[in-house]
Length: 176
Ligand SMILES: C[S@@+](CC[C@H](N)C(=O)[O-])C[C@H]1O[C@@H](n2cnc3c(N)ncnc32)[C@H](O)[C@@H]1O
Picture 1 (tube, protein in one colour):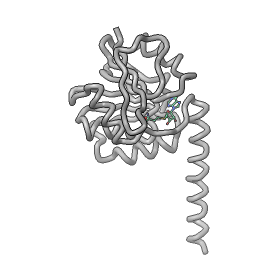
Picture 2 (cartoon, helix red, strand yellow):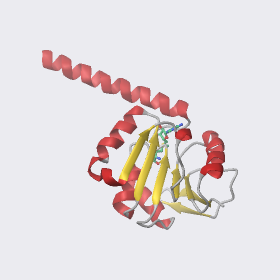
Picture 3 (spheres, protein in one colour):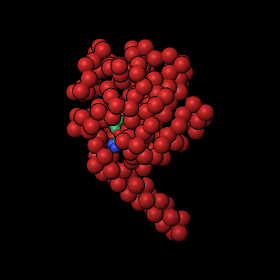
Picture 4 (cartoon, helix red, strand yellow):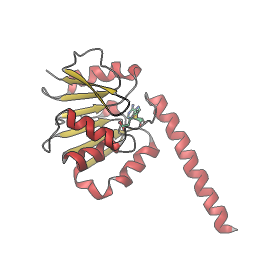
């Protein structure tokens, strides 16, 4: 009986954490819908990433992009995630590759963009307007920006392509 009660309490705790995380993600600017690792890998390859790159995922979710960056490309990955459940999940999922991954439990607006060669974003248009200004002001010249799904309105795309079965649109930008 006691064991069942403890399991029930743990279940309720994780349910509450998951529900709160979803609310935080939506208030933060984007719902917690992750890009699959296979789609990430395809996008990163088509964007021309190599082992030398340092990819920053602004709103890194449960870590698929970070894992694809390290395991499929061999590059280094840094994530910023505001929502506790995906953040904790991504920390657990990247334990075995932690030498090449750093994940910050923080708002993407606090992200240090210097040193990144690639920035990946999968965010809603509403938040993208502000993010676009931050990218333009703070990224090193030459930084490649990969935006999944939605364009940045303050930058002119270098090129666009589609990826995956659903032909997800990808926008590529280069910071001048
Ligand atoms: C659509 S998901 C994309 C996740 C991941 N980039 C991917 O493509 O698999 C957007 C993520 O951004 C996070 N997010 C939303 N607003 C944020 C903010 N202000 N700072 C950091 N993360 C944020 C959400 O919690 C969510 O996990």
